[in-house]
Amino acid sequence: MSIELPVFYFLAAITIGAALIVVLGRNIVHCAFSLVLAFFGVAGLYVLLDAEFLAAVQVLIYVGGITILLLFAIMLTSRASGPGVRILNEQLGLSALIAGGLFFLLIYALWKGIPALAIKVPTQANVPTIGRVLMTSYVLPFEVASVLLLAALVGALILARKEKD
Amino acid sequence: MAADYAYVGLFLLVGILFVVFTIEVLSRLLRPSRPNPEKLSTYECGERPIGGSWIQFHVRYYLYALVYIVFAVETVFLFPWAVAFHRLGFFAFIEMMIFIAILLVGLAYAWKKGALEWV
Amino acid sequence: MFEFIIIMLVKIAVVFGALLLTVAYLTWLERKVIGDIQVRLGPMRVGYHGLLQPIADGLKLLFKEDIIPAEADRTVYLLAPLVAIIPALISFAVIPFGSQVKILGRTIDLYITDVNIGILFIFAVASLGVYGIVLAGWSSNNKYSLLGAMRSSAQMISYELSMGLSIVGVLMMAQSLSLVQIVKAQSVVWFILLQPVGFLIYLICAVAETNRAPFDLPEAETELVAGFHVEYSSMKFALFFLAEYANIVTVSALATTLFLGGWQGPLLPPVAWFLLKVFAFIFLFVWLRATLPRFRYDQLMGFGWKVLLPVSLANILVTGLIMAWR
Image 1 (spheres, each protein chain N blue to C red):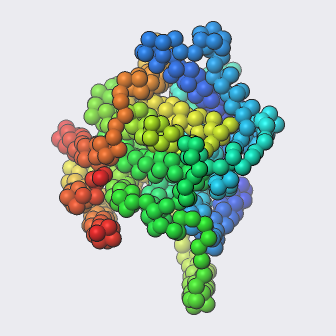
Image 2: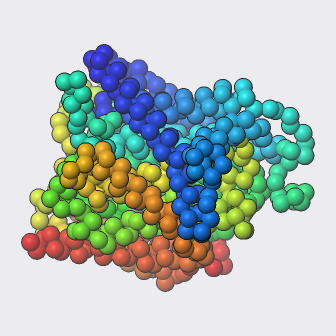
Image 3: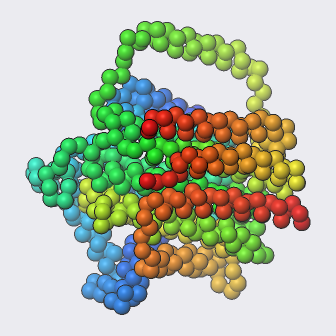
């Protein structure tokens, strides 16, 4: 598959480019929209890895849900939805240092780790397998996830309500 | 499997080309362009627009989106479960009902707290 | 390989052309049917019984001046129509119109591609539809536009949830997310008979998702003028219009695939059955618009969250119980 490589670079370029706009854009709504593009790039990469279920979930949850939530959050902070918000503050140096450190750590981990990863490409539809594994081997994390979701819901409702009163 | 999506990509490309062609080529050649300040002003039923439109929205939009995400995640879990349901049997059914029940508590809470009321 | 690519390109061109033509004539059909219901004639002037009306309308929009408001956010304003129409069209890449035909000794699949996660693909793509509206509403910098867009997005996410849950019962029976497999699973009995409640929920959500009457609040012309696309003109307006109607065709085709056995049926060729069922759904959409008054927004949201969501969860519970018991 020779075409896979250019497609990968194309998707990676979209992801990184959009992510840069998210961080550096001056208009916060533009940032939110390019976040959508970045999520798309990631979904495309998942498809390239034959993880199509994950790709669909990525679009459904992150693009269709989280970013909409972000947009609503932007809309309910009064002035921020207009253009021209300050994007840098005095902690620039420190955060650059931490982000750079994390970046090199990741590179190092990948460098050391890749040979150890044996990649198994699934041969048939993987969705039933995901369902089966969720209900057997990983049933405890699965149920805990629902408690986590409940906690997130309740916590967020309490916070949002307080703001309103 | 990823190859199936190449056709989706091709379809996407055809769609984008169609849109760009109609707006930017075909219509551009045919349509007039005589803008003036009155024409370009924001429409507000004939009145002069008052202030911008990028204003503060109500928190209830946010609350709905929040509850949506929680249940969207649940739906995403339900899909693989539904597909594998035949082979899993009754135990998996109970497991999923527990999962849904826990989230229903969340829905009941949101309901009780009035997050689902549109006032 | 080369031959294969040619076949694929021809298929894409045919699907694309047929879709655009259907959408264009959908506007004619709607005006005619509503005209009949309201004891009027509808379009009569252009061509026999107004048959050339959609073409005339399209040409007119092509010739119209394209106005970009001075206050608008230019980039996003230009991008919005594209983002609105693409999700509406791309769902058709996975919807099967028939199984296979033999043309010139070659077996040709009557779908562009059959991905393993077909139904999830369509839901993922459909969840993008809201962005076209939000982008348009926000970038126009018009109060009506933004209000319509916000309403629309809140409405669409609310009903998307119940829509997703309403088809879980179907998936439990079909044991696959692939649309071709789901159709094949209905060779004995259509899922509308096994999942009547799921079908009803799907239908209601489909109407709400496409922002059609009685759920057409984002456009509510009496209060919001035209909603999110009030500042759009010329071909850009036409694209929003096309997107709305293409979405109707999409949800109708999906309903056919999921609940009405897709292309399957006696005597007639499969594609004819498929088109017939889709047409029946489209007719229902028009009929609803001519019959029902608009909801109030609090009723709409309350109905989605407090009625449809619990009922669709109960539907899953009952389906699971019956299947586990048998």
